[in-house]
Image (cartoon, rainbow, N blue to C red):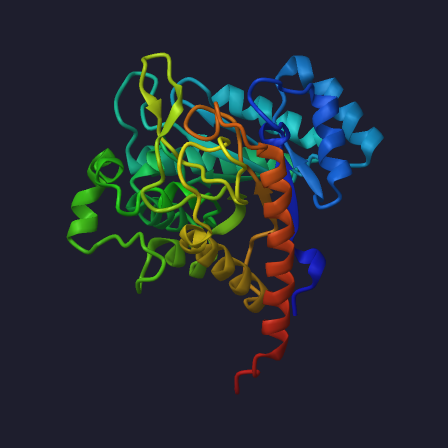
Length: 339
C-alpha cells in the first residue's frame, strides 16, 4: 500500500515568481518555495554561474533540488546533457526532465529511432550518476505528435530498458478542439482517423495509455483548458503570439487575465491528474515519484499576465495534496482482488 510520502510535490524555479516584470534571484526563489509550506522540493537545472548560489540556498533552507530539466538538440547537446546530469547529481536530484527538440542540429526532424538511441545513451549516463532521465511530452519537441511516445517506448523496451517519461498534460489538453495546434507534425491525421484520442473523457485517450503503461516517472502540473486562449499579451521575437498553454488555476482578479475565467473548463486537466494519482495509489508498479508545479511566465504560457504565477503554483500544490490524500483513501477502501 502506498503512503503519503510516496509522492513528492515541488515547484520549478521558473514558477517561483509572481510576474515576468520582476524575476527574483535564485536564493529568493528557494526561500519563496520553502516558505510556502506546501512544497517538498524545488526543480531546477542551474546555469554554471548560478550553481553555487542554488546549492547554498538549498542547504540553508533545507529544501532539496530533487528534480531538474533542460532542453536539448540532438547532434549538438550530448555533452551538455552529461554536464547537466553531473550537476544534478551534485545537487542531489533524483530525476532529470529531458526536452528533446523536434529538429536535429543539421535541420532534419529527428526520427523515432534517433530519439530511442539518445534515450538509451541518456539512461546509461543517468544511471551511472544516479539521476533518472525522463523524456517529456512537450510542444516544439519530437513528442509533440503524441502518438510517437508509444512508438519510441516500444523501441526502448525492445532493447531491454524501461521507458520513463515526464507527463505534462497541459500540452495535450490545450490541443483539444484546437485544429491549428493539432496540425503540428500532422497529428490531426491520426486524430481524425481515430488512432489518437486526446479527450480524457473518451475511452483510450492517450494520457491513460501512458499512465496505465507505468511510463510516467515525473509529472509537471500546469493547468490548461481545451482550445486554451492564445497569449496575445506577449509575443515571440518573430511577432507571433504566445501559443497559450497555461490557464489560471484559481480565479484571477479583474484585468489579470486576457479572457473570461471559468472553473469548469479546468475539469479535463484535473481529470487526468486524478487518474494519475489514483493509479499511483493503487498500482504497486507505478513509477511516479515527483510532481513539479510549473505555472510559468514564458511567452507561450503566462508572460504579460497580471495574476500571480507563484500563487497559482501554491494553490495547485494544495489541490494536488488534497487529491493525493483522497486517492490513497480510495485505494485503501477498494476490495482486494481474489487470487
